[in-house]
Image (cartoon, rainbow, N blue to C red; front, side):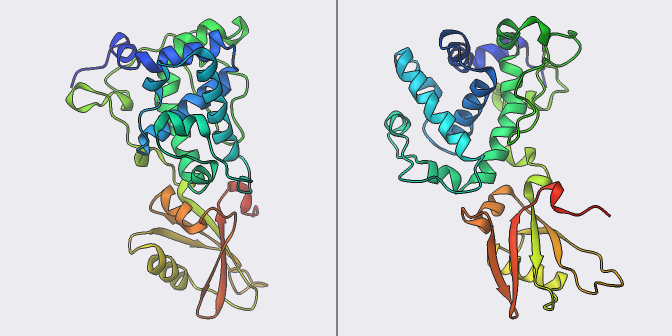
Amino acid sequence: MASLTLDQLHTYHAIDRNIFSKLVTNYLRDPVESLLVMATWLWLEDKGFPAIIPKLLAFSDSIIDAIADEAVSSFRCLESSVPPIGSGLLPLTTRLMSREITLHMIYDQRYTAISGIKSFLATVCSRIFSDILQRILPSSSFISIHLPLIIPGFPHPTFGHVTVMPNFVPTVEDEFSRFPDGLWAWNPSRNATENDRTMFLTFSRGFPVTQVEVKELFTTTFGENAVEGVHMQESSGSNDQPLFARIVLDSVATVDRVLGGRRIAKFRINGKHIWARKYERRDLPSA
């Protein structure tokens, strides 16, 4: 397998680079926002929407800038704990793709979208835009050619860290350089972390729920292979029933199926209630 050269990488992503350069130089948009705009468009394309980025070349700068504003609305709605208000229609993006797209459609896949955008930031945008970022970031961002660029705004509260190396040159060891038929390929499911696929469950005191019941509920409702593991709260002398648990699911898409666009989903098994929400590390109390 041959390594992917920097020139080949830039040639393959020439249109992406063209549009990103417009965002940060012609329109003077914030670099963090522009990275997230590109990652959002790439994620939508990966989800099966018609290619957005190549079509942008046919539009004026003002229209491209306006469509970028709709992409900003898209990733910002993912930062909210409540669904969008109103129709949420993205009119320019809908017209561009000849297919209706709304903030509600994106929000209903909230955690899939967050995970996908994070992965595109890490595996694509951080590589193909590194030289452009070097040109537009202040000189104070360059501590060393051997250290990542400092991009104000990262780590992002929703999309986390992104590592952009100056003078990046891909090698055969880079995971993203594995490409069939001479083209680079990306597998979104491979990039989701266990934390991305984990939910936090709570139970009612006085109605003890077992690990077996939790697994039965989720496999019956969401598929035989939906559950990778269930981690119940350890009982103590003063508390003989678990009041919470972590459940690791097979994919981020299953997390979104469980929540159905809600912040908290409620389930019932054997007369006992289970509440489920997306897991975050701070959810579990320290020992």
